[in-house]
Length: 155
Image 1: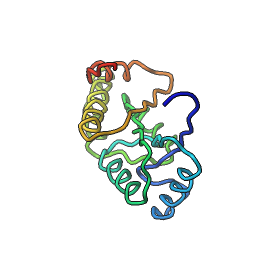
Image 2: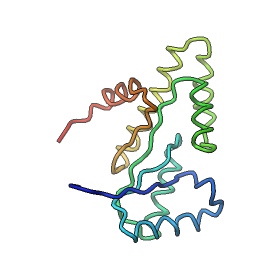
Image 3: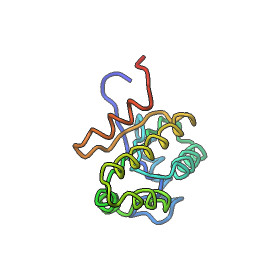
Image 4: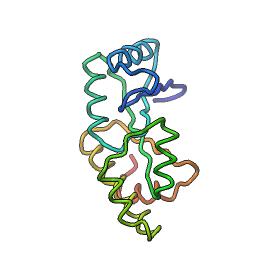
């Protein structure tokens, strides 16, 4: 895409202000029909939520690229803050358990969070995601590590 583009928000786990998921996709379709070029999703930690969202978009006739929102979790404090900022992002028990295992080792906890996000990105790429957007919160170290681990080649 060159020049000016319009992106709109998508919510794989559902928009917090729209409890009816069918209405939510209808609202998203209206935004797309008004000229959106792509959808960038709110962060999520379970790819099944993204795949379900992408399928619901397809059913609704939404054909623009959907960019997956990724947020590497590197601490328990960051996990709690993220859930609050994202208005209740669902954090899978297996991720909570993984981070809790390293409660006494901040470096090991950071590595576990990066490993989770790297695996999440690899799975998304293998399943034809149109792009990845990283929520870094001005801390790009984890994102750089994930990028290096993914070994993505520039075109």
